[in-house]
Amino acid sequence: MKREPIYGIMAEFDSATALVDAAKLTHQAGYQKIDAYSPFPIEGLAEEIGFHHDEVPLVVLIGGIIGGLTGYLMQYWMSVVDYPLNIGGKPPHSWPAFIVITFEMTILFAGISAVFGMLALNGLPMPYHPVFNVPRFALASKDRFFLIVFSSDKKYDPAGTRDFLAGLGPRSISEVPS
Amino acid sequence: MDEQYKMTVDAERAPVIEPGYTFGTVTEKISAIVLTRPASNGWFVGFGIAFMLTMMMLYAIGYLFLKGIGIWGVTIPIGWGFAIVNFVWWIGIGHAGTLISAILLLLRQSWRNSINRFAEAMTLFAVACAGIFPAIHVGRPWLAYWLFPYPSTMGVWPQFRSPLMWDVFAVSTYATISALFWFMGLIPDFATLRDRSDKPALRMIYGMLSMGWRGSARHWHRYETAYLLLAGLATPLVLSVHTVVSFDFAVGIVPGWHTTIFPPYFVAGAIYSGFAMVLMLAIPIRKIYGLEDFITELHLQNAAKVMLATGLIVAYGYGIEAFMGWYSGDRYDAFTLWNRLHGPYAVLYGALLICNIFIPQVLWIRRLRTSPVALFFASGVILVGMWLERFIIVVVSLHRDFLTSSWGMYYPTRWDWMTYIGTIGMFLAAIFLFVRLLPMISIFEMRTLLPEAEVKAE
Image (cartoon, rainbow over all chains, first blue to last red; front, top):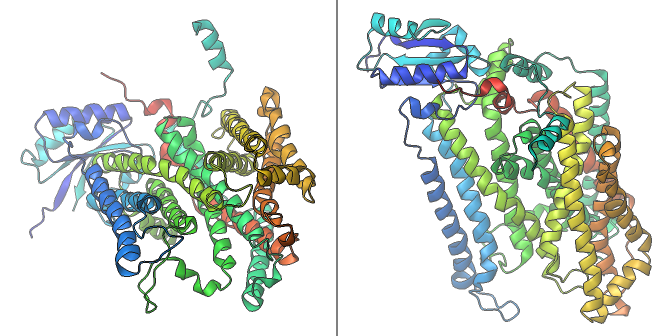
């Protein structure tokens, strides 16, 4: 696959408000392939850059259903089908006694799905990423806010995009080599 | 509420975070403890003592493996001695961490952001200590894996109608989910440490742990969703864990165990002791590492209020136990109550009432509630009291049941004590390592508390 020598153009901002405003304007200007980076979650920022489909809840729901079924069917199969034991005259299929483990397995599978599903959907772990080539990007985990327009965007053009970002009043602008 | 009155109340309250901090200073202050602050002599002495206690525990467990549980004080009729007392005590302590990280998150109590990280660490280490006891208590600990349903050549399966089996699932799920919750919260902070550290080896280690986190808005969105869902899952989980622990007792027919008040009263007691442990750790740590600006008077006060409330629920539990001993008309239940008050362990019951009910009432006084020293001692008293509670539930109920011919006494041996004190050492050793190696306050969540984190509309 041929890669562009430039991954994108990145603008650095001082505050969360500036980043949200810049993201909004960039998206409104017709840029589709953009991303914003911040040192903490900012409510509504993902929506501003055109991210609307968060699949994590679905993954968790599926994980929980699988966990619950696994828990119940495991107990059913083991105590009714494979090795029925008469314990205190209780029926082999004593469903009320199976609820606790069914519940715990639901939580276990749903919780594991939440964490690993989130990581997988985010494409993590990914130790290398082009944005780390920008030295100032180290501040994205401290107190600076970054906006990037990827070079794969249809509207991207090296000079024009740079001028557009410069018009948003950033602190600095850098090219991100890929 | 009268507006003016409300304002004076708010002005009197300590802030969640002292004013004057920025994203940069918060980041520097917390990450510096891990990255640049040299380990003090005090740290080495403290860690050394805790480590030696851990070795003592391993020695006691090693001897146990050689000799068997006959070296402990357990005999029939008291088959559940220190091992189960300590198991319940430790697992209860763990509960406060999940309460702080999950339940208070769902309730939007943002003050939790400064204490959730080390409360979660405390949960993990407490659950690790708790997990040791049932495993070594099974008699043949090398076969402890029989507790799990695995396909074996014996062709048999565990007995799923037993609360002990439920406990295996509840506790192992709890340990897993707590570890995941903790690790997930650490990911963005690992990224901060990766970017702040100037040593290549540290950059690599923290870089690996951060999974390449870069703070993308899409990532944050999924992250927050997952975090919230995990909190929503951990909330019923934490309530279920101590409920299931209480089923270990309540499903049995022993007088003093066979009661429906146990689940709520166990959960309240767990949170009670857990907050006491949080305070016993937070008070020295905030002093030593100069974190009074982040863990403020507000946090101490709120924790004290939670202890006061859960302590009253526990007191209600004791009251109902005593009331039912009389009201049920069951002579064995009535005898259990009499035996607690007048039997050979009556001193311990008296101490329990003093530690868990009477002394904690000092927390009603505002001056004491805001005094770190007073809170530290009150927390210590509560931890002792909650340990006594489990001792009384386990030992005092078992030692005199239905038949006078099967009565007996339980005396812990030095091996019991060495194992118990050893787990405290292991817990503290883990805490000592934790404060040096990982950010003990969640940096990214602290940033969200700052006024500058607010996005102003155009």
